[in-house]
Image 1 (cartoon, rainbow, N blue to C red):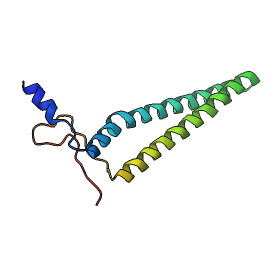
Image 2 (image 1 turned 45 degrees about the vertical axis):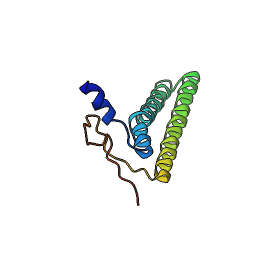
Image 3 (image 1 turned 90 degrees about the vertical axis):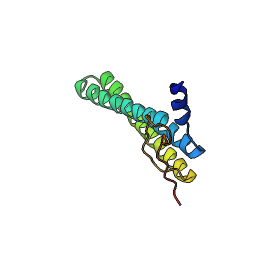
Image 4 (image 1 turned 135 degrees about the vertical axis):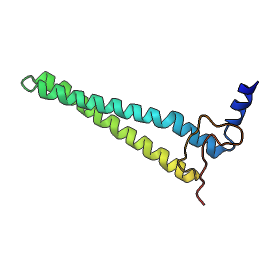
Length: 114
């Protein structure tokens, strides 16, 4: 029975807390992961391009990986920026997430801009 009451207290109290929790727990880690993946593709393309300097086909493949890595990183920076603009527009500021929140404690420290 105690387990269910602890989960009930962990629920967001308003829409700002819900938006911040979704952004912090789901969206930001996904953006970071996709950015790192694009960076790895970019770096792999650099390695392919440099190691295949004598072979035009390998240079072309490396160049393609470099291009798609840059495109991926640009898209992820754009998505992150758009999310920050949305959060700022809604008046939600970054808070500290507390997954161990108990009775009387907020799951996210809410700091609204005045």
